[in-house]
Length: 355
Ligand code: COA
Image (cartoon, rainbow, N blue to C red):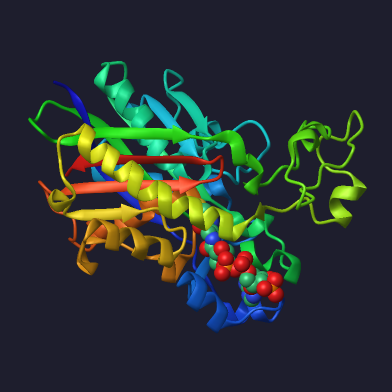
């Protein structure tokens, strides 16, 4: 049976290192608080006016394409996952195509808006296209330029200290090799708590969701007028043009859903947690990863964490971590690799791969 496998992988992080002390100069926070609650010591920020989500995605994609040993015009489908696109529309998929200089218009481009689980969702979509025989070389990118959209005042500190910029990419190809490649994936969603981790403006909601909102928090549903889909005065004054997160709520959901979706994909593919060689979790919070690690009974060298260096890079976090693990020789041919992510939506997902 034909499956997909990762034929090439690469990542890119911008040069600029932002420390916790740097952030404490502009908002009330501290290195101690951030490290203790999240494990994060530094994050990277893209260079303003020079780098974007698309350009960082392109740098990672170039490495993945080179590692796969193909020409960029052999790519027949692009999947781009991000929550920080260059433009409201069009999406980063076509911008990446242009940035890479892919002139083949037979190539399709699809954008995924699934935030932290975007890459794992994208992997599953790519896998289905390859299994069905529709495409041969799929470029899947996860990239984020969070630094352009964060609230650097104390009001936004619970969100801002967590996020960082970067990109990761893979080229997926077909293989007939017995037992190799993507063995299975599980995708889930529950829109009940959509606003608990959200960035609602710009949007065409016009105040509609106010009807359903959590009474405790003003998410910024200003009574937008026709023509005010993007931004109005109320949204600016009240900081509703930035991401919002109910941190403790998200934390509780994450520690429940990560183990569930991992056990599900193991069962679906006939594997057990003892079979996992490397677990690459979405880098949401080091405490979440450590909790899941304990549940799975994995040693430290069986879990790849890099949130300490890069913070949470949302759709880019799984491919950056996987790429680093591969580069370091921590993932070898034949290894069973487990990927899992949870985030805004809520959406959560897992995938199991035989490297
Ligand atoms: N620096 C200093 N103090 C901060 C702070 C910061 N960066 N951010 C929040 N605080 C303060 C709060 O204002 C609050 O103060 P108060 O008690 O005086 O009101 C206090 O710290 C506790 O806030 P809380 O939000 O309850 O903290 P927490 O222990 O839950 O930690 C997170 C906050 C964000 C680190 C944590 O909730 C978390 O990691 N949640 C999951 C986030 C996540 O995974 N998001 C991505 C999903 S993919």
